[in-house]
Length: 289
Length: 289
Image (cartoon, rainbow over all chains, first blue to last red; front, side):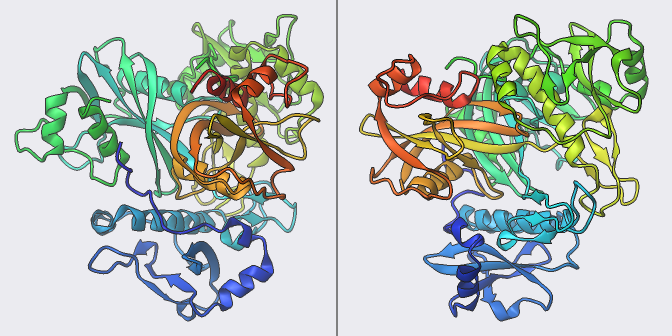
């Protein structure tokens, strides 16, 4: 399996620095320190799709500096401002993602998820009071009740069920015209990955599966999912879709999937973009996974 | 790999019922409906380690009924009360878990995680106002700002690094005397499973790894982790522990791990309990994974 999108950041997260106020102060004073350039939560990139970085002096007044990590020993930050709106998803954003090397998109993914989490979790869920940022941006703590809160990452299972050489693909109403992809859904408290895969396929398409096998994973920063890609063996092929989740679902053989991945005009569907792990998963399946 | 602890619940989560107020009303009025018997958040079990269930009339006044799912079509609920304290972990709790079949512990895990989440997330993290329960207990929504919040599940990677036939095991200060286990840590926003495994082993023990392979997963309801078990190939064996995380770490060969799993008094360490996926992982590794 090739490395999925949003993986391969060159940053060392330098977790030990986050709680070391002296080391943090030194990092902020380091003349080599850089600040991720963002337009709201959208990345700013150069002609090679690489992220742009400014001196720390570019941070707006009142911003908190979030330590993203170290690039070959040099500190890298992002700025969070209390006036920041929650993250949006525009067609321009996804166009940019398509231009970025996966490692650059990986650095962006971590930054975006933690900044957006800071925006959407300003208050203590335990007592309702304003919560303060700590750990260089990687958490909030409540000065009233003492609760600590950490950025959440929501596991999502995404999977291909196989039946007699065909893969089960589905289409959500919000997809671009013609696109089909692997089914997906949030894992719930009390479930294993394997159980979530079986439940989601049964709920969304009426297909029972066994022999769930893990394939690959990726972060997906909209807002902060961990995508866990699997394949499974289907025990039936009579699709009954849950129309609250899917607009359509169908079985596609390996030749059909290969044609879609090759942008063949005769393909039975349009595939997900390269940075989506659904693409990684379909590629692995088409090659025999 | 055998099924890990906390997996195999016989309940159908019946997600479609959660948002269907008529169906929920019917489920609550069903004379076959049952309520999970808990002592605070601790399970009440019979002599076979099976969960005990009461009639719905046993729910205390002012409690919210959380729909756990359907057992062969019969509704199963748990009661959440606004006076509930956050979940604690007692030796008695872990003793009980050791007596429970994994499928029963799985039902308990989902119930405990969602009840404890309701207790620890009463307020809207977006605006600080009290948030209301919806989706039959599987979420809160804010009547002030409209934000919806869902029970969180925190991915944790747990892994064995292998070097020349030996597994890297570590010991946290809070472990019972003699116990060693697989290293573990929370996955962060912007990371894949494979990247989190490599970072945690490097941070905690100074070991660099490659070839991360997924083995199994389990829910861990303290308070709501998804444990993701992996093996990886170590590139060095000179351990340097992070004493904030570990009290000790060591390399153990397959014979040593087999002795520990067999409760051999000559084993080099005491193993984790059967319901912990660390045990599943060590067993798989000892058998050649």
